[in-house]
Length: 183
Image (cartoon, rainbow, N blue to C red; front, side, top):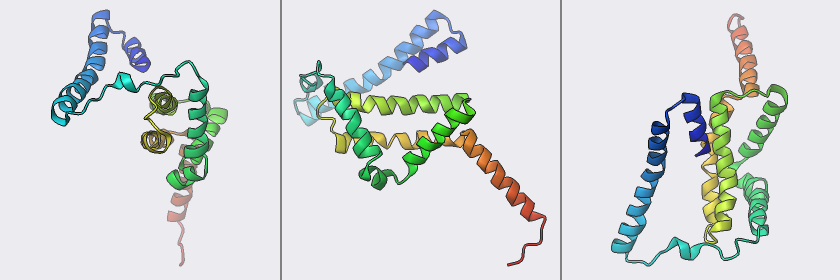
């Protein structure tokens, strides 16, 4: 939602359009939630399911949130299981992001949007695990982290480091085209 307001600010929309678009942004998912929980689950599945009943009882204990965040990093992203799940993809992204921040420190709008999406997933999944105990680490959080992969790919498509390396490779390839290469 904050990114949406930022876009509204950039477009210099009137208050009426901001309210209408914000309501559309909020009411459309609420409508599908209502269809799923209050109609499909209630009348078709006939299973009693109330999200309020499943919210954690110990919300004042922030150590649970920090523990979930630490477990997500140490187990799923950067541990042995992380290498099995993602290969070196996450580690390469962290290296590329670090180099981009240190040496290039300029991001186009697409890179900023991808980093925003990555941050929402990266910070939101531990928060969901803290709020809803049935959002476990090895199933729900792991599946949620798969949503990072296309965002990381789109970020790296615009990375100044990778664009520079690609340019060097392209120059090298075109320099070989003019020469008689023997096998």
